[in-house]
Image (tube, rainbow, N blue to C red; front, side):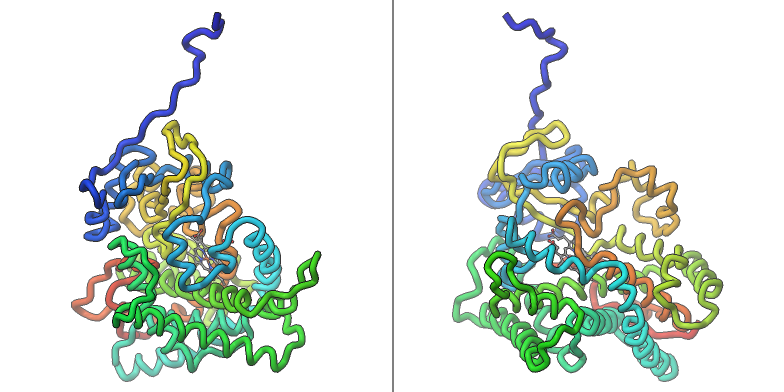
Length: 458
Ligand code: HEM
């Protein structure tokens, strides 16, 4: 006889509900129409929602407790063996971003020292120098009154920084080609995902050919970076040298050419688009929020008094960092992420089936009113130490968390803070009349229409 009292029996997991879709397509059409609106509506179903994307059983986990479970506590049960990542693999191959298991761990350990705080601090001078050159261009535009695209400026700047600081290379001349290639890839990958077009781009159509060409452009850039370094193969003390000189502890083998290309391409792409979008949002949001802009200027005047910032200033630029935090909250560049569920599990009391797809969205979790009152309001002081401590860890996760947390997050903080501080001391970009700041959800979340501005003086 079972002596356990009925009250002590474990409660069976509940079955999650979710948005209903069409018979064969599931919710695919709704997602295609307005992915951000659709994602927000999944919160109506509790901490996680269950639905069908095409024929695939899928879950959207929105609550911080569920995110902690899958990103940290039970992370091995949630892998990148997902068709979303298969699409990313077409672009960056099997590098640190897309690999799993031992291959991933080896690469992560190899790359980690390049992102050590002291190493990043040493890159501050390069970051500020590159920004000062953009500042000169902004001064010229200030005088001429001609409009500029903030998105393009931030892309070129962050691409240059990641190229110089991590790969010891100047990609200035290739910036335009990289930007154009990446736009094709980003638009097509988003389109293919949303229209459930899972076949690789191998057909002789103009559409598939454009993808292949764009991919080839990126590979050519990376091949040039590697060839140039091979001409001077000594240790340059940067990430590229780490990749090129590393030897397997057991076999003594070095990375083959294909693997090296994948890793370099991963860093080049992951290391610039996201930061550029974040900074673009910062300029648009500062224009819309004069109080925050005034506070930012007051801090810059007090800490820097007109001189260029250094790595030592960064911890003192507290409000500057909060501005970036708040931009990352409202418009996290990586706004949707996927995983495959390996085995049956329970998240926040709900069953999650092995073999299904699972999605998370910082864009949604960062707007849950229980953690973020008046969520659409731009308010950098949500990030005071007291307020941060009062929220669960995964109420805010623009860089993810757990073992697969962004390896470049400290790099991005240093870079972002220095760029904002350098430019905001002298310039106030104003969005041109008639432009409305809205998100465009492609591979990353960017301001639509390239964010045209006129540069005005402070
Ligand atoms: C504001 C800027 C950035 C944001 C919001 C961001 C966000 C993220 C997120 C959410 C992930 C997890 C992706 C996933 O699991 O699918 C990630 C991973 C990654 N990020 Fe970033 N990132 C930023 C800047 C950078 C920079 C500057 C670099 C390199 C210089 C970088 C390199 C990477 C790499 C290599 C990974 C894969 C790490 C792994 O799986 O071990 N990121 N990033």
